[in-house]
Image (cartoon, rainbow, N blue to C red; front, side, top):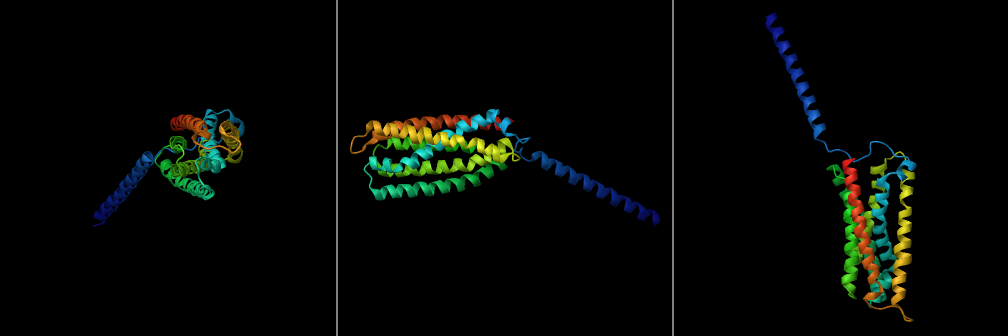
Length: 251
């Protein structure tokens, strides 16, 4: 009887040991199957950030997209007026851009988290935002003097602009780490100021003034060149964002 009890205890201990090994093996398999995170292996100091190709690709990717949004917001009243829209329509267009801007920020934030969980770089959404900005400018251009189409284009541009502002801080953290996040984030913001100067302060007023008379400007030509140039710039920004995503994916 004593011998039989000893054999039963030994078998039970062996069974527990095998169960433990099996659970450890399952844990290791789950870790191997987990997606590779896109966070950097080290935290980049500001000086190192300035020397990183990813930094310059990020700047070139967000510059046209933010310039597109700021140009649209700052000149929306004149864009609608040049198409024959009344003051009430201008106010409605401003509301459309504001709502689309907020929805773009909310939607992009939620979607970015899902993309990262699947092991894809967040820069994929920056490509989409720049392409959406290019689409908005193309809609403005091809719609001529149509006010309803201008409202649709304004909504698309507002959503793209809001999405880019959601992506800027998260991309900065993904690419350059969180230890020096404040300093690295501040290095990115001058691109937005430069975008405002290039697209909203220089390009749009110069094109508008070229076709304006003493009574202002009316017709598709008032912003036509501005829309085409901004669309082309957003297309170039999408290419830069794509290169940034490839670089982030390959490490």
